[in-house]
Image (cartoon, rainbow, N blue to C red; front, side, top):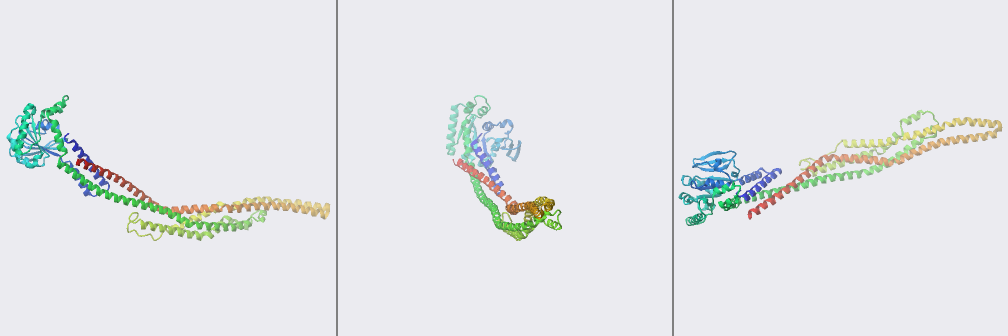
Length: 574
């Protein structure tokens, strides 16, 4: 196709302009910039205008058929008329009268998207159209083709029409000597030499002159064999590259392309500055959100460090409570309880106030105020971080006029105290101190039951000794009986002492467990407390990161477009 290189460049430029418009839309750009690009794209589609002039029957229709590879005359595109015909692309064939001497012909032919063809009536048919052709079409024409017949190139009307063409427009004029297949090469050479001499004498310049046979060129395009030979003999091998070169190096068109590229680069530069600024803001926003998240983690650590002394003090309180409970256990494990068959009313009272309950109450009494103070610390730290977020996050996390918080959640301290109370309760109940004492008492009572049964044999032995041996024998028997009873008492006391020892060991070894349980509960509460800010910070972080990545992708698109338009500039500068 004529001007392939130019049209390919124009098509690529149009695609990149569409990409630029899409990028501006993606970035929420102004409608003015988009409108400018759309106008640039529309201007690129402006077709080349070819004006064909010649006398009647010089073969203009055949020439156009051969040049564009389309059978205009056969398809009815070029109806015989004495009017000027302006051929444009349209969805369907339609003739629209413009003036009494001009018709627009709309044809569904793709080549007419790039080329508008002005076919004039024969210069020797109607003289009145000459002025309209020269004034309306020749000034805007990219190329004016004067078609002469090799059988009669001296028709006065064609040369008179050329006289009317302004000298400034003659740079776009070429001569085509048609029907050269009807002449010998020698005759053609004589004619072309004379036409060149005539134009130099008459207009002071040479015009590009191409002797051709349009009939042969048209046949070559549809021939299966000898196509190259016929095309070479037709003269179109010289004409077509010349026209393609005119199309591809048309100064006005190239200037338009250059202006389009320059304007596009200006828009790109402006867009690049905007994207760079927005990228910087997105990076700052992402960094700020990350700073908030890091500060949240640091605040959790700082708060936990403030609470560690409370854990140490609670550990000391527990030791003191354990000593008090141990004293109570001493009474519960007294020997007299081993010889009690049924619990006395005093034992029932002790049972109602179990060691577990006493330990729990004693520990809460000693450490309750301290943990309430810790709740106040949590509330203050939470409020401090909340105020920090509001002051630093105005315009990003919060509106610009957002007031600073004045108080924390009133439920915070109550929930924390309830959690600590529940943790201590679970810990104490897990000790099961009363259950630890009960087995020892049962074993002691079981052994104590043998004492009454031993008393009768001892008395019998003492009586028998008295009877047989007198007072001395009775005394000896009584001493042996006392030893036996003492041994029974010793076994009973040993069982009680063992139980007492197990209780003390359980209390001593439970200290670290209490500390671990309290530490885990405190860590959980502090993390949960400051985790309230995560639903605010994490979505903001994801949004900032996504925006940063999106702007990075847009920046890469901008860089590629900038390089592409720079390449266009180099291409057009050659």
